[in-house]
Image (cartoon, rainbow, N blue to C red; front, side):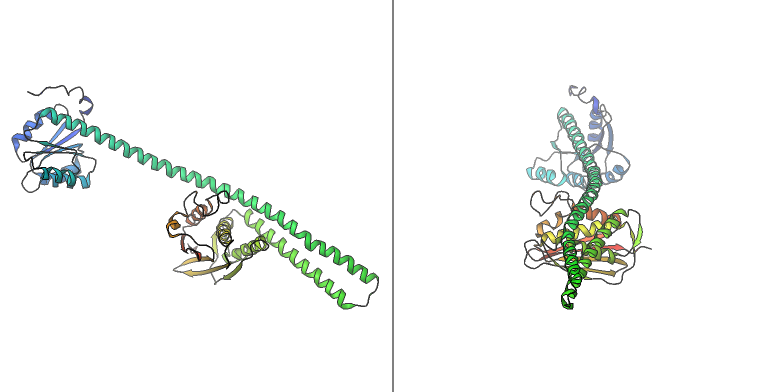
Length: 396
């Protein structure tokens, strides 16, 4: 007679379902008498029916005989594990061969292996521990799912806030750019003032040297042209940043404006040759600010990658392929290590020195590309250069 010391321990397990699989009816009945006091018991004589039963009924614990006609218990446990990995599996066997035990545990992910004749208290203990193990595993899996969901939500919030930060940073950069342009305007402006004074003196003195006056006028004209270019660049950048409504726009024109801005910004500190090869492409539909940010991020990264390289060249192409508008940007910078290619779109990743990069530029770029149902790919030859290919569906 088995003792009932487990009854209080098993009160919480009353709703658990246990399936017993054995080809001998007497064993099924004897095990049912013990287990039905605490669990919902399902008896199965034909192991080939287990799969169909599991499709319609939730089972927490599977108790199966090892030696059965048609299929061994370890093989049945393996099949069940492949479909329902969280079911606790217990095997009963009259064979004490260690090889069978090892095979059963390895193939079927067995929780417990008990020998016949089965000690009832040992069986109840194995079922209870198996249920505890199953519930702990399910709890951990649920916590992992919640953690992943929280991480995804956190990533969305980070990206959303990062976009705002990048937009604020963009206006901050525009302010710095405007200040630098004002500073740069002082030189041609001083030339204009000086040239005008000299010309005024020349005219007032009625000097007959026409070549001298002509050279001064050319100097003034060149300075005026430089000032006009700078002012137009500032105007274009401001107009791009103020446009936050979807409109039809010319991507090639937006690229030219960004090229002009980058050349003026870096001409004195890091001059780069930019080769733009545009093809005739359809107008794009979107917020120019978003595409301006994409171009700004990629071009800035290209410039930064070529700070310490001998060859400084950027190649930009636009073309249509497979009903998509494509943009290709290649730089002759230091490139990206093969192991790092998959990390460049992760938050916090940066190839720049600590404090010089936020690790958000390419994250924001990919997010903006994806928001327009676009795709972005990168290829890099470490030590030679990097190319980015971005393709957007043609607006209809």
